[in-house]
Length: 254
Image (tube, rainbow, N blue to C red; front, side, top):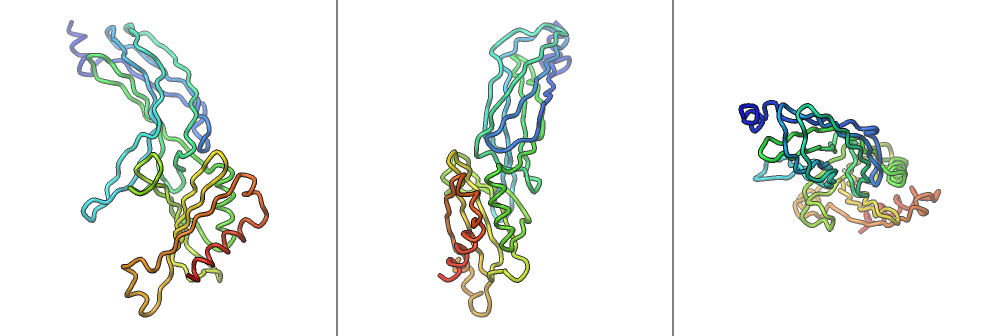
């Protein structure tokens, strides 16, 4: 009875350890591994074992920025079972990540949180970081933007209530111009919305203002927007960088 009491507050409780076979993949890719469950000092009723795919995003509250976790995928691995004292189980898994899984470039975290729900006890958990690299089509677009004179300097998830996606945030890739082809741009913000058919590319172009034009910056007159849709076949075109460059230049003339 005393051991059960201790287990109910987490002492002598069951433990879990998640072992990933691979922690590097791309949006839409697969993560596989095993969850090791180690029984505690007493028999325990396990309600469920699950994996959560989690990321973080930034949101502003009263002129201060706060970071929030958001679950972008949930994967149940077991149903209810009884775990005997000291027993060990290995639960294999293989999960497919959503196409809109954020990239982990620029220290943007994405991780697997494993949870063991214990009836009448303290739930056990484990956290494993993932390395989400760009899908080949996303990577090609990034390279094309760099070819026309922009350098990627930050990637982050930012709250956006107007974004049509399933999450309360959007991942923005921010580029700075360098060299002689600056287009008179202060910053280029890019969203790479991966789809089954290809990539929807959203561009936000912040103009570099001079003179009296700076007075109107608060009215967003310095921002230009564009959307490009590429199929996976389109992205292999040799003139991809030229298409993006022409789109940016046309918006700058408006």
